[in-house]
Image (cartoon, rainbow, N blue to C red; front, side, top):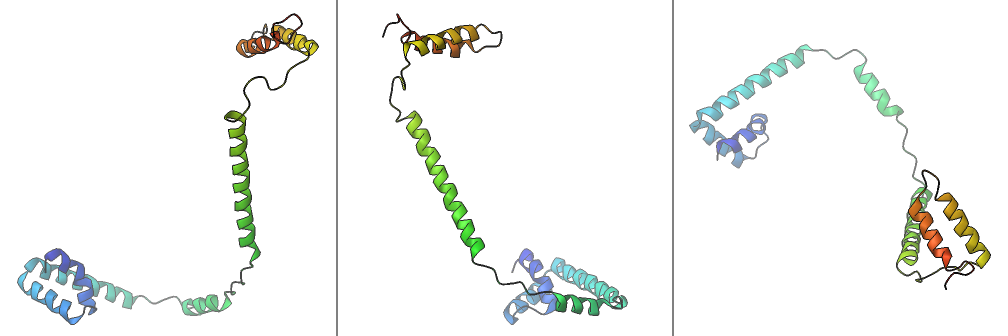
Length: 163
C-alpha cells in the first residue's frame, strides 16, 4: 500500500473501523514506513488532547431537556394538498401556450405576412397622412426617415399620384 492511501485510512484505522484485511495492510505499512508511523502517532496525540478537553467540559444544565423539548414540540408537517402541484402544472402549460402563440404570431407577422400594402387609403386620407408626415418631419428631433417612408407610401394613394 502507498503512503497517500495509508494516510487516508489512518483515522479509520485508529478508530478500529477498518476490516481485518485493510487493517493488516496498514499495520504492515506502518511497520516499514517511518513517515506514516509518525502521522499515526500525531493523530493519536491530537485525538487524546481532544478527548481530555471534551471530558473536562460540562454541558449546560438544561441542554438535554431543551433538546428533548424541541424534539417533542415540533409539529408534524401537514399532508401536502394535491392542488398546489396541479396549479403549478397549469401555470406551466399556460405559459407554454402563450409562448407558442407569441412565436406563431411573430412568425406569421414577419415570415408569412402577405407582401405589399396591408391596407390601402382613400385619396383624402392619403393626402392627410402625407401633409402630416411632411409637417412632422420638420421638427428638430423628428425621425425624418420614418416620415419620409410615410410620404413615399402615401404618394401613390394621393390624388394625382401614380398607382
